[in-house]
Length: 238
Image 1 (cartoon, rainbow, N blue to C red):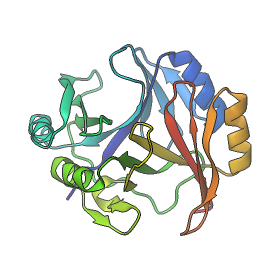
Image 2: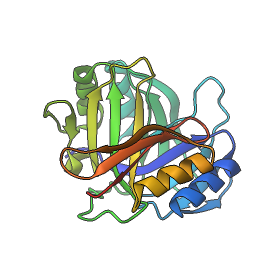
Image 3: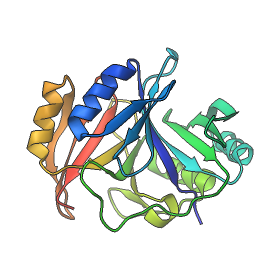
């Protein structure tokens, strides 16, 4: 069994600015609980992190349940990643750590009192997280990395590699990123009206980078940059 999604994080330079952006865009309820702002209504536990580290960019990341963080971090380094935050206790219980994968994508590991099973759902509600995407320079290398670190089952199905929803707790895709821009990890949220959502993004100061595009298996998707330049995806009709 693979290690499943525990929570997601959106790092922002200005927490209040990010709070206003996402509350307006997705109708989330976001409350300030100190160094974090807690997101309610996204389908999975989420946080906006007030990101003070100038040597690391703002980003979106996922925290994955693991049985043993030290073993996980050892595997990260063995597979070519770098630990940027060693294991530390969190006030709500358990502990976390952060690392960057071989493409520099920031990810998190979490260990708590219980090891959660898959959080996958048959129906994703509006404004909730539906799937995630990892754009990598070398898909085969990233496949080996994530299979080893998180024990995910990843299958090559053509232009994308599918990350097992059962293994990861959320449907995911991994693919070769051939553009000059930095590789990334992004989260996709289900919306009711793509055009209205993208118009709202622009009104709030974000930037649309992929306009509404058809998905071969049905529905449409788009991507935008939030006020910190974090790539975020939306989709509809699936």
